[in-house]
Image 1 (spheres, rainbow, N blue to C red):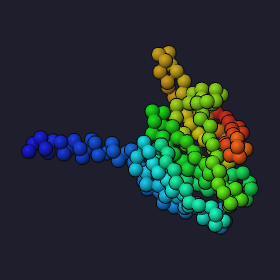
Image 2: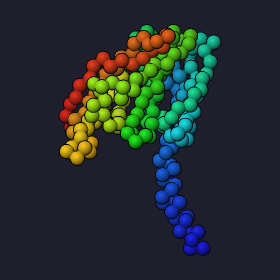
Image 3: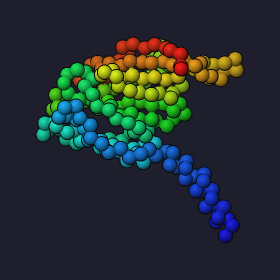
Image 4: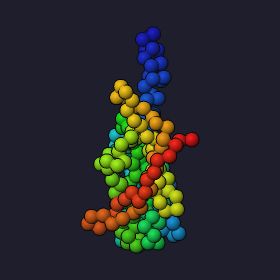
Length: 196
């Protein structure tokens, strides 16, 4: 009996909270710009694999609902007209729950409310100008149609261990034409500043 009680206590106080931390809160929302937008439904069951369902709202009748899987936890969603064409773009903010505590954005753009195309966010580790000092903990926000990404900067100390510098880096992205009709986020400006 004592062994059962001990196992139960370990489960309740150690294992259950760890399992719950890997889950996020369910997101079921509708977001619009004018009469068009998106209904988003994600259960956020596992950081390893999540399914999302997106239903275009106010689009032409031939635009169908679509679903896909992604790795990470959906933390927030926003809708805005990022490419200034009068039609809504959807941003899905995803925390990958990896060793860097890295976050990313999945973008979806309306093509005149007749179809949708992805907006690709390049991996920050692929850009030598931006990866120096990067160690995750990204925060995203939209400000007047510009996607802003902010993260703390790190540098190696004498022992080779990454230490925070007290500075932050902010990237400002704009939407540009990608390959084969897709769209991509391009860094239009970035700067470092002292953390307050």
